[in-house]
Image (cartoon, rainbow, N blue to C red):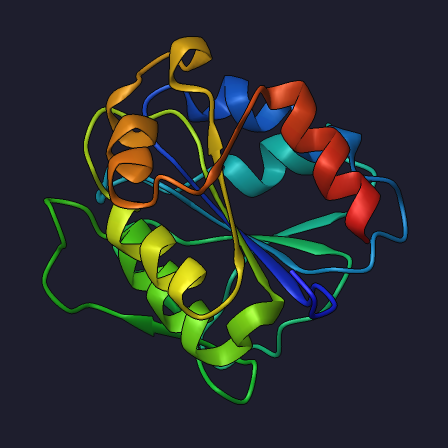
Length: 188
């Protein structure tokens, strides 16, 4: 990446809480970049991800709202049963379009819209998960000139998602959770 990083998108599913717990609390207070996260959640329940991670993290953690401006130093979680998109003016939009691969929010939808908005300034991270959501999105990030990172499938609680991402984007960097945390902390 020759462009200065502007934003990070992370996708996770089965095993997400453990994986994110190894990364997000490592980000220091005053972290400069926005971190936008999609976790597959049941559509009919309120998400407690923002509260759970706010208790663990030194940076602000929020559930994303429709039309909200995206700010550095904040971790945003997609709300359940909505696709979370990044608009070209760096605001969020929420959508109730059809689920993608049975998932709403969809990692692919977030990553593709963020790739359009941030181009080569985007870093995409695919973590543990049991389906292939995120593979197309990570490919879009890398095709836009951004950086693609995948949790080492051998170390993932559910390897299907990182394996699918690596198949579609073989030049993505495979890293341990510790390595991902160190990389993200080092770029901001």
